Image 1: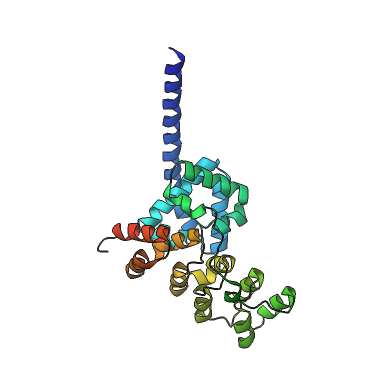
Image 2: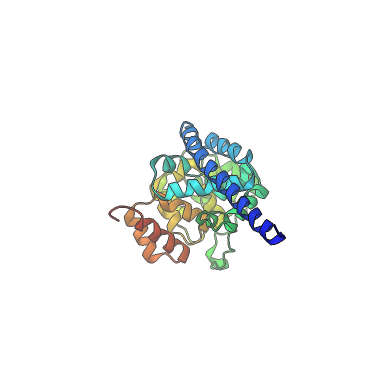
Length: 264
């Protein structure tokens, strides 16, 4: 057997072994979904998911995410209940680390997986002028964080659009904050992608449907987060995004989801 033949056989063997590993990963995902579905607390579920990914090579971790994304797009009930907030690059970077998430993204991109777009680096926002942003506060950030914890309506209203994400994360936990307030922030064109990302990563508020809609319609929301929210939207809202979103990726993904839903 000459060298070229050996190389062909080696490539065939490698492709076969990769297919076997990938099939095994997809079978493992059934058990993973059942396990994660038994965990009620979203933060504990995220950390258990991170443990599962951390114990596997980058390729198998990436295939796990690809499988979950595929099942989520098909509207599988358990996947939809479990995956909200799991397939988010910001959350996974927090529990896995940036290097691990970059490795997962590299595999997804190399395999041309649709879920790669969830982890693509965010583009810098260029549509805001200085006068579109919230006024810079005069108090030190530590004082504003302390104020954000107080259940005083006028303080909540004033700090809701604070430019520092630490203040916004604090105020999202304020007992006086209402869904109307959060929708106002999530739909604001002057909110930065980092601020909108903080809203999307808040388990209390992202579970609210109006907040999902506001984030999905805001062109400043990071693209990966918007695409991760689309499987949770009703047909009428998907149809509106498919027709009117300013981003081609969102229009295309919304149309794809619509086409896979019976009666859509």
